[in-house]
Image (cartoon, rainbow, N blue to C red; front, side, top):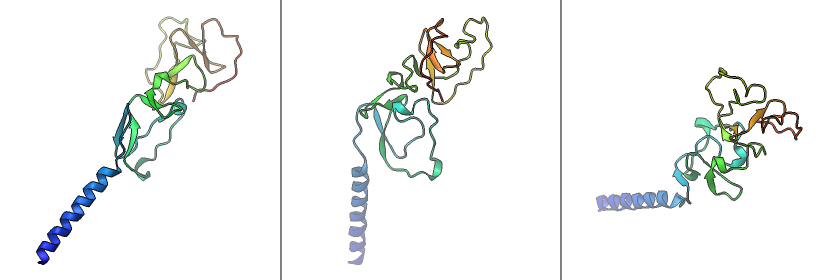
Length: 156
């Protein structure tokens, strides 16, 4: 009788455990995936262009829905491609990207055969096609508009 009790007890516990783990998982929306532990990196449009601290091994892990790679949440919580964010610290002439302005800034965009390092800065912004980076104002402008004063917006 005690063997049967142990078997029934273990089976009941096992079914309860499996059921509780399945129920804990959220049903993810479009462009989301369920992960055991949230990853580091930008999670919203507002995060783009700012350093994102990573909790590392000490952070609490729990199953949750996160945006697919290359996507972040907009103001409505919907996952969208990073390039569709009106972010980059309010500079609408910029988009999330490499952040390496070498050869694409007011001070050097006319230089031929400019030697640039190839590295990118994590979670940074780049100027949209046709724009160059204004070194002093720290925003993207059209070439030739370098004396135009606009509110200072900093890339980080």
